[in-house]
Amino acid sequence: MSVLSGKKILLAISAGIAAYKTASLVRLFIKSGAEVKVVMTPASKDFITPLTLSTLSKNPVSSTFYDKEDENELWNNHVELGLWADLMLVAPATANTLSKMANGTCDNLLLATYLSAKCLVYFAPAMDLDMYQHPSTKTSIEKLQEFGNVLIPATSGELASGLVGEGRMAEPADIVAFIENDVLSKLPLKGKKILITAGPTYEAIDPVRFIGNHSSGKMGFEIAKAAANLGAEVQLISGPTYQQITHPLVRRVDVVSAQEMYEAVHKEFANVDIAILSAAVADYKPKNSASQKIKKKDASLEITLEPTKDILASLGNIKSKQFLVGFALETENEIANATSKLKRKNLDMIVLNSLQDKGAGFATNTNKITIIDKTLNAALFELKSKEEVAKDIIHEILKRTDA
Ligand code: CTP
Image 1: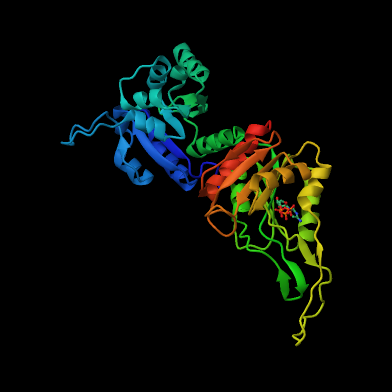
Image 2 (image 1 turned 120 degrees about the horizontal axis):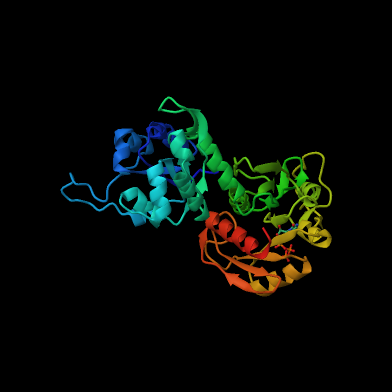
């Protein structure tokens, strides 16, 4: 999955011959899972038609402040477009457009949108080699970089003039790869390793029966996704669940019992920066698991249980640099119980779910959490989808670590 998946990309096209390549750019962005809107200068329509771009992007293309032929004369809102985008790419960026961007000129919709945009702006220059070398172009590029915009350098090669040299717009696939790498390198969890446990554990009574619980694993899987989307390398250790995850930064290990989860977690713990234990681990397991299926008898059946190892507490005992997060599912005296768990297990943060709250806990798509940290501050959150809750949890961890 591309890091651009789900991103809103505003492609701004100015009038250079390389504009013909923007059709491929739009296709590549769409293929990466991004949503694309196009704004273009009126003159760039001589190089590529808005119809091509609106068909490929599946969105209307804007080039003027309002459409003269439209009797309603609808205003194309540059502020809205600028705010809509997660990132903006000016490609091709001609010498003229670069100069205007650098100097705050605002005589077309593309420039007004650029000035309104709050997101990161990339620009891919394209022009003839002498124009590219001209001091005024160099000054424009430097100024734009000083403003925080990101240059995607032009490459060398044959130019439309027939001359050979620097000034060719980077190829569409290289532009997409450049932006992907840049976005990835700026993610807040880039380079961090996170261990996450999820789902229930099953403790065998005999070869066909077990003691388990209703945990769906959804919360842990959403946390894994949220962390990976912010660039973390995630080691997800999951009990039996139907949840699926496909993310290049998530490595999944499946386990069944609390003992297997304990071993898998301890294998990884020394190498991670953050551990989030959201699994609903069985607290007890049958003392003896029968090797053959237990036959029905008239007499009652007693199964003796013994405690499983507390994985979270065992990590609290050995942690050094790791930021350790536990979960608490409570039915009464919630804050007091969760706080005591935080202290007892030597945690940095605990995520509390109360079964008193409708829509919280196991097997729902929503959750309502309270986060308590070492300073014993309790932050209460609204009922939200587990996807949103996962983002809140990661955000709270980010606030408390150097990540
Ligand atoms: N946990 C664990 N290993 C266990 C049991 C629990 O790692 N054998 C972790 C869970 O993943 C969760 C936290 O401990 O992060 C809280 O689990 P919970 O069962 O609520 O806490 P307990 O310490 O078992 O306390 P109690 O049963 O009294 O609520």
